Length: 241
Image (cartoon, rainbow, N blue to C red; front, side, top):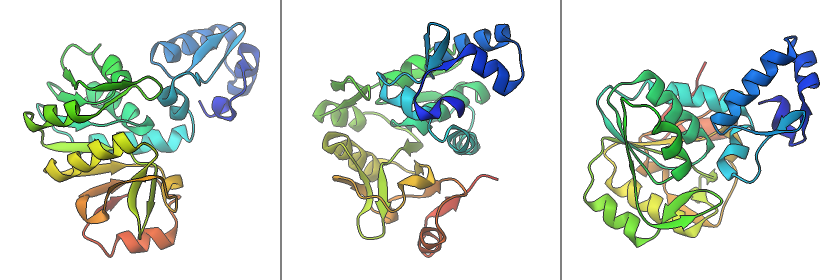
């Protein structure tokens, strides 16, 4: 996934040389990754599938995002009901949840995430209804908020597009922002899963303030300025080893 991150096509031959394994092994691995929605197979090789927003973004900073996802799983217990919003880290997190936890009920706003984890028989998936956004595969709108009124969950895991001290957590999409603001208000325990590149960025729409978040799980590249600021608040900042 790191090799594919620059967006160009990479051939099976190139993969085999870089990773020092056979081309047959590469072909098997590419097929597995394609079936999981990470990439797109093309003649002679593979590339990140830019037609699917989440699939494409999962390949960017993949190693750090996977560490965040695996760390977040430690906060989920067998048998819990949790809400997983959207975003590339949340997609990786959802896959880790169904691998490592039993009888978890996952409520999600994202069809991509629902498709991936619904294949796991031991877990239950609730995909909320609403206006479907094809690129991100999210559902948004008032119907989503009506659904949230009748569902109970113990933890919510949300992805963001930006954060500064003055703007709080922000996102590119106004309709998604409206849903996330609602989730932040009703969730008993709110987690933000984000890589460090989002700190210092300001996007169009506000999600919520840092005071509305219980835990932030990010990577070791977060700037010391933001780390120091967050640690002056009541939020629990977690950085994977």
